[in-house]
Amino acid sequence: MSIDESSTGGPGSVLLPAVAPEVLAEAVESLSGRLRKKLDAAIEGCAAGAVRAADGSVGVRFGEDAVVTLRPGPSGVVTEADQAVCGCLLAPRCLHRAAVLGASPIADPQEPAPPAPGPDPVTGPAAAAGPGAAPGASAATTATAARAVAGPAAGPAAGGAEGAAEGEGLTAAQVRAAAALWEAAAEALAAGVTAGGAVVQAELLRAAHTARIAGLPRAEAAALRVVRGLRAARDRSAAQRLAELTGAFRELLYTAGLLASGAAGAGLAGAVRRSYEAGGSLRVYGLCREPVLSATGYGGVATHLLGVDGAHYSVSDVRPGGLSRARGAGAASVALGGAVLDHAGLARGGLRVVGATVSPEGRLGAGRGVRATAVGGVAWGEGPTAALFSRPAAEAVAAMPAEGAEPGLLGCDVRVVGASGDHVLVRELTPGAPLLRLAPAHPHPELPHAANLRRIAGHPGLVLRVLGRPDLDRAATLRPLAVGPVPGAEHSLRLPPEWLGRADLGYDRLQGAHFPGGAEGLVPQESAPAAGADPLADSPLWRVRRLLEAGVAGGRRAVAEAARGAEPAALAAALRRAGFGSAAELAAALTAEADRRPRDAFGCLADASAERYAWAWLAAAAHLAAAERSLVAASWA
Image (tube, rainbow, N blue to C red; front, side, top):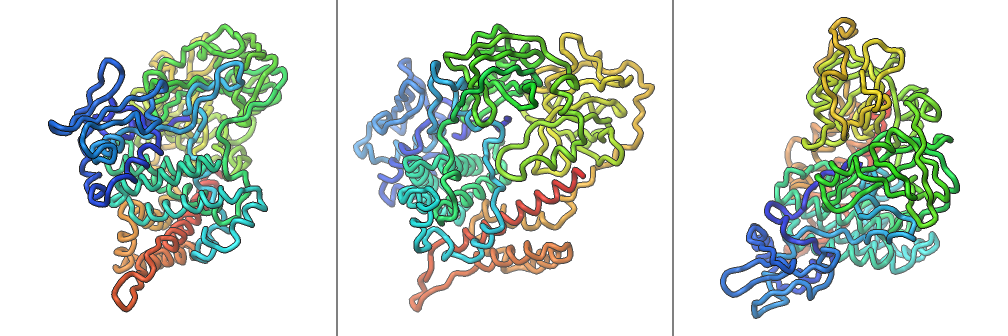
């Protein structure tokens, strides 16, 4: 449940309140063409002079004659156009006002769930996304790729799309909204980061708002992730990751394209708010705690629980506050049915819940009728937790869904081999097990994940029990949330009795006393390789990934430039030698489409639409994601 924390407004923008997407979109749309060309330059650095007044408003001065004032509502978000005013003569259709709104963080439009007697205990929109806020970013199917190769005839403009979609449960308004979002996304992809300035972002935000009104929250959320990624990339933010922005574009194009083409059911539209249902009486036991950080400034903790029947549950406490809130929430009281314990105690204890309400993701609600009583916990490997460590990790990974929801928790007993960068190389204590990597569940330096793993890496030969979440985007990689000693092992962790045989890597800090005292018995049974076998790095698929990311960074023009050199032939040859013939064909189709610029007799572009290019890019991205998933799955075996 770890998400990179950033204000998305660039350096100095922390004073600016978040702005609703539709407010920013309307401000940019009202500008003249001449002012739109100046908007990106006006946004740069304008937030550095922001000053917060005693009444909570924020002012930004432009010279001597113009001051933009933002007065957010009770929620701290600018949700109405009249909450952003400028003193110049052109207001409200002025460059100053649009620039300040463009420099402000984009607010998450999802409203927090209502307090009790409502069933949802989560107090912030960040928790609504749950672990892995990007839902199904790699869920494109072979049929989608085939439709992408087919070109625009299979796209949102296909005749009869509305009727087909309505037959699947979507309305005509939803199909139209998805088609508009697809068009905006295709133009943003063709522009890339270099040309994806405030005007392009505003078009996406306008289409995202329309999708929200039409009842397409998943598509809207995907669009907001793309806009935030474009902003971070253009601001050269430390939190920016080109691979993440590429995945966000893939998710947006996949969702909007499938909805608009009529090939999707109403389930792809998503849900605005989690639906809690009666769960009766439950008895759950704590597994571990996990810090939560949101890109929109929320922070907190999620405590993972296990029912007596093996079902997974969680209790979340996520509120505004960012990193400081995430660090302190690990010891905060649990707001669930009057239970008198904190999250640290719940992670090592248990609850008996009467009148429980449970979301589809397993989150326990805190409605008025819920009653909870603290009960004793169980050690890992005892009671219902024994099933978590009873089968090899490869078997547990193979049983997880290949698409959609984030993978669940798995446990395994491993022996430390050594360090590889910031990863720990380990081998499972089962015959013939592959080399695994333990990577920080959250790399933030103020959280102890990485520091704890460095201490563990310094003890080759140590055996320990690990509970974590597999990273299905990387070869044989597990992101541990907690560790503990292996029962009966002599050279294992030595944790305090009050820790109940586990250390939460996001909150507890391992010390020297927690490791075996002597070096005897800790000699590794194998030497640590420079790096474990990585089928992703060893395959030529990185060439396709580089081509896709070049398109995201430099737009269609960058892909077209790549098509004119020797790179396409080398790419195709390397892919075909490795048996990736389909990848070679899709990459060739992408470069050819990027360079296709037909002109009429007067030299004007005959087809200025970016739709065919977007379908070709999506086809290559969908195939790449599927191929990489297959390689990752094989790395665990």
